[in-house]
Length: 207
Image (cartoon, helix red, strand yellow):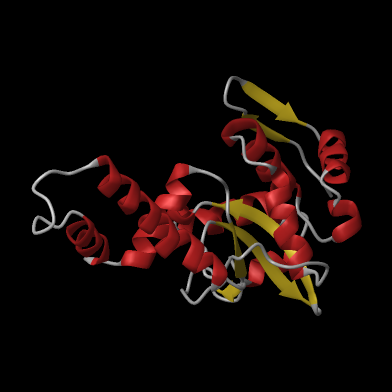
């Protein structure tokens, strides 16, 4: 049973009725990719990604195609199971929205605690020049991107936001989309409130 959602779309409060959710599912081709295996919450999350954040929903759809064995991943990490007690048994798959925060997260992950500082000191070497030149700035920019985004992408290690899904009877059930920063408790609350009426099996993961 589908239900409507009352959401803020970035400019106003909007009521998204079940009929609209069906239309959006068709638009995103989820009715073909995973018939009966996506929640209304997942569709609304996709809609708001586009409406509020300007993220193309097909970035998510491409990763779902990969999970369904219908295409390659977009250089992101493979799906992994949640290990913490709150979401244990559920799974998440990264997708990479083209947002500054996402790129910053990958850069920080790649260089670690002191790696970026070492790179800056290497490029802005006072033994080479007492003045920071435009060439140095360009070289730093190139290496930050090349040594983090490009290398992580080539290794299939790019991280982004999360597609939350369950594995039931050998199939994937797509439940919600969530930022890293949401926290397991908030994700669990959203799943319990937004998905359990459609997929009762959610109760064994988030009772």
